[in-house]
Image 1 (cartoon, rainbow, N blue to C red):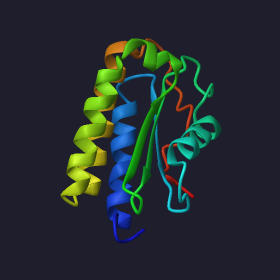
Image 2 (image 1 turned 135 degrees about the vertical axis):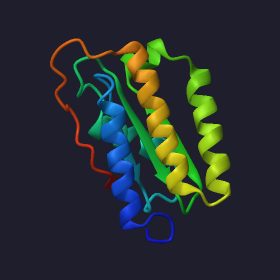
Image 3 (image 1 turned 180 degrees about the horizontal axis):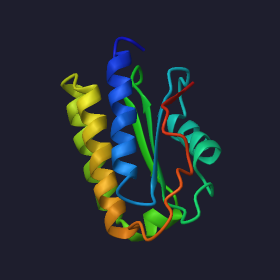
Image 4 (image 1 turned 180 degrees about the vertical axis):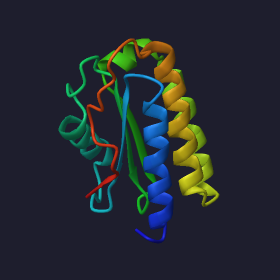
Amino acid sequence: MSNYLTNQEMASLVEAIQTAENCSTGEIRVHIDSNTEDNNAEMAFEVFKTLCKDKTAEKNAVLFHVNFEKKYLTIIGDEGIHKKVHQRFWDVMHDYITTEFAKGKYCEALKSAILQTGIELKKHFPITGENPNELSDEITFS
């Protein structure tokens, strides 16, 4: 793990998640997988179901599922956000992150993507009252 993100960088990603979530009712999760050999997409969806699916009132959770060793990234938005944000948004985000990963900019790419996702969530899911933190901000691992 330390080959890709330091503890300090992981802490800065958690801060980025908190900053992004403070702007909307949306929730963002980051999961780093270093076990899956193949079927990364299938594993990403399993992780999404466990961590995010139907766990937010507005179905507006987003998962960044990363397998650095396999150079694999999946971004999954729950139904609520996916209905409002077109596939192109996720495609552009995916292209940006993978381009930056290729340059070794792991933390910078994820941090920027998290903050951009927060901006997008704010457009569609503004805070109108209470804004409970429905999902943990901590990075999870497998």
